[in-house]
Length: 290
Image 1 (cartoon, helix red, strand yellow):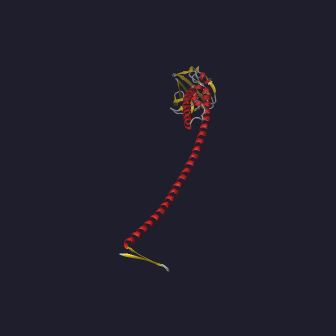
Image 2: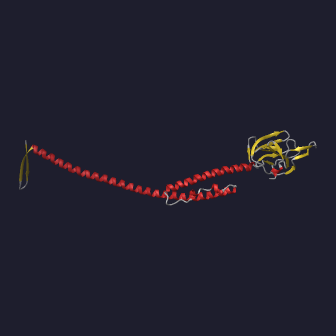
């Protein structure tokens, strides 16, 4: 089968007879050319879009890296400044520790930082090295402070438990330790303590820190408080009007443990004060005037 192509103009005329096979082949070829030409243009456009997207992403990454770099510089500067401030405080704390040790009768050198930890932070060292050095210095100083605290607590307990002073806030010494005339029968009798007279209701105070081993009524003593101070020493406070502590209480030196009264075998408002060493009464007067 053939196909005739006729082109007719005003002054020209053209006619061409082609077979159907050649016409179809030509049409397919023309379609492929148009398709390839169209596809190539579309791929370039898509690649350009992709390239722009990648470029934009890279620019955002660059901006992010710059921001992180700036933040890191700021953080590093802040850490360096904090390290400098901590070193100044550590130096002050070291001086304070040494001074406190000296005032407590201890050797100040035993509570100072070692020489290798006292050296200032150095610029030639890395930041991590300076941070590690500061951490070591702080840890060492904490250990020193813990040791100093334990020693001072021990010294304070010893000082607090040391008997000294009068057992009343206000009053006067009215009767001494030793043989005296019994106020009830007039016979010579051993007085195993000292008496401080005063106004009823006056505070009766502990002359040393310790643990209350008796708080209540006791024959002859009336309302009595007894305190164990350790090292075989105990004190007794008798004839009270009322008691402010109970058995098992831990009391401090100078604490009000009772109010002066006239209970038990008594002829007036006063406190009967005894000091016992290993269970035996001794003269309290040397402790009163310590």
